[in-house]
Every structure is written in structure tokens, then in C-alpha cells.
Image: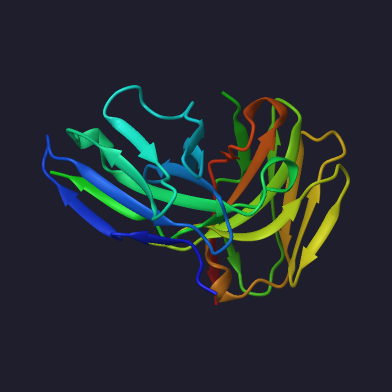
Length: 115
Length: 112
């Protein structure tokens, strides 16, 4: 029973390029979350999605960042015109339920390096 | 936004010793989760707590949901070298919906 899958595991981009990070939730999970982690820090919430809907994007930067979770296929976190400050580990999590019993299970992360 | 204060930031202990770490928040939390993260990997869920006062064990790990709903602790008994890693507390509160707020982590180092 596969866990949360993310790819690529490592991504290198030059300033100004686009980064696309993909996440496939655990089988049967329809709730997906994206978090960002800087070195030596805890994870910071970015966005919460259900199939075809963005539920909470309060942690997303207002510009250059977008996320989607289409009816078919993985969730995508897209960063346009990347800057050096975007370098971080990006983690996706999924849960079976929402509300009070939403145990979130994390993928291995994508480590983005912006040159 | 909400903040979780996790302590200690790091611990260097001898194999076989017990370990205790805790998290406090400035507001009431509905859920407390404890994760472990190894280098280059994602956080792995260790224990989930949903009720004030709840005490839950997972092998050598024990965690409690504080009665005030503003704190939680994690204990590891008889530590072994593979316990090395970073332990994070995380929680959800009434105002934040499903998002998890994470503590800053406790880095555990175990000397064989």
C-alpha cells in the first residue's frame, strides 16, 4: 500500500524559471496539503486542497505560487519565475478525513534549489 | 498566526536513557500530532492525540494531550541509536481549519 509519493525528489532551477512539484496522495485520500520547510525549521503550511477545489490557501505567497488538485492525476504545486528565496524542501501530505481526525501522512518531499 | 514552542531544541543523550520533550501553544489546540523526521526524508507520524488528558503509547513512545489543551509532551524510554532524528510536534486549532502548525523541532542525538 503505497504512501504519499512526490516527484521529483530534487529539482534545480535557475532564477526566473518555473518549478512544478507533483504529489500523489495515499490511496483513498482526497485531502492534500502542501508545506514548505526551510533548513533547521519546522514545516509551514501553504495550501489545502480537495479534488478540484482549493479549500485554504492562507499560507501561499500571493504571487508566483499556485496549486491544483485535478479530478484525475496528481496535485501540482507550481512556482513561476523562481527566486533564490524559494529554495526549500516542499512536502505534500494527505489525509483520509478532514476536521478533527485528519491524521496527515507526508511524502518524502521535493528539495528545490534555485541557482 | 499560531506558534508552537517546542523544547528543548536539541538533546544529546546516552543510549538507554529516557527522553522527554514538550510543546506549548498560546491558544487551545484540538489535535496534537508527533512526527519524526530523518535527514532527507519527510516527517513520519508517531502518535496522534485528540482528547484533552489523553495518554497514548506507541512502543517505547508515550505522548499526552495536556489537560489545558495548550500543551503536549512526548517521552521516549530506553533510547536506542535509531531514535536519532528531529522530532516535531504539530497541532490544529479551531481557527485554522485543517492546517497543521508545527513546532521548531527537537534534534535528538544518541551516543551508543
